[in-house]
Image 1 (cartoon, helix red, strand yellow):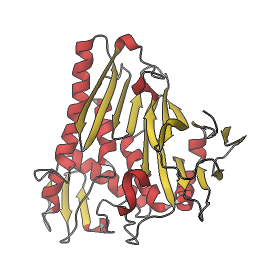
Image 2: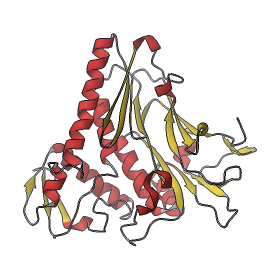
Image 3: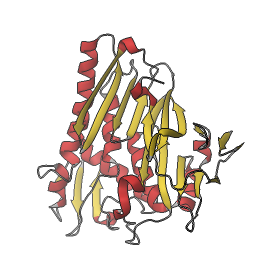
Length: 322
């Protein structure tokens, strides 16, 4: 059962009014990073942070000794840096820049590029085109041969942008860089992914970014990732690739998924879809989704929409609570 405000009750697939907060935009706080709710004993924990992909990458890893932990933390960072080198639109030497400049011929691409493109194709189909790495409804002009790992663009002007999923994929690869026998947490620009070796749980908190001390919701999981797309993060420049207009329904969309890449892509696509379509998709596909819908009018009350799958793992906090 989940409570919000002064009442409590099941809210799966329903809408709950948020009367205590005028407007909400969500961010992620991982208790593990602050050594509060991490399953890793402090004496065996190594933490490191480095800038990459235009943001900050942080890793917390269980280790039998500091030198081993540092080596695994470096391996996790190297995995993220490799994704950045291939998929960044801000690097002239990246693979995505090269592919975007070639039209009409098959190009051999890396496994990272091919797997991210395959994820993008699947996410686009699942969200009815709301997730679109061309940002302009031109997914049909990209061809992928998964076996040969070759890509072909059929039209001039198709620009590829993996910004809606590459960070999640980088987190998946960072987790895999650490041996499975050890607990690990990785965070990249607010999206977090965790793995527990013995079933112990991590507490991932969604917070009100206007007051980062105020916890909005807590998700307890032993593995997987939570990603949030929100107006405070993305601004009004996000465009629905089908309509060409900025989405104006949801303030934020949070998704939990075992795959960080999928969590990233789905939170982006469902943010564009809006509350009703996103909730319908989530309940039909068993996706753990939580959205905050913009209130109506000057005194409008924001509302939460929560899918059945999310309702099983989330606990909402009372906004009147300290």
